[in-house]
Image 1 (cartoon, rainbow, N blue to C red):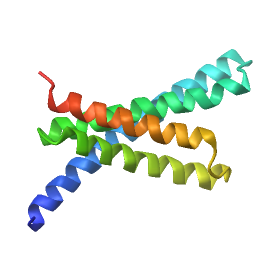
Image 2 (image 1 turned 45 degrees about the vertical axis):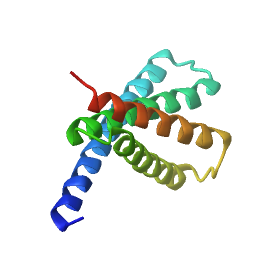
Image 3 (image 1 turned 30 degrees about the vertical axis):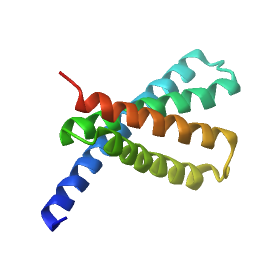
Length: 126
């Protein structure tokens, strides 16, 4: 693999991850506004909402990566979702210092699965 093809692949990966991060951020802002508006959101609903936002972000990251690459959507989707997970995990650890919990493992699995599915869907778009 030469230098330019590596940079092209890295660019695809980073653009997909950025799109997923933007979608995740937008959904989290919407969920936060809804929580403020409702005033009484059950504490147990917060973790599923964050997992849902991360899942949508991972799917979009995979879809954009797969669409930009035109092939190898499974791998691009997996890598984009993994990078997005690492970003979210590190930010979460900096803010909360909760460590590894069941929710982290669930988020990890869901994000990787949906990232791969998004990559496949992005390659097969019409």
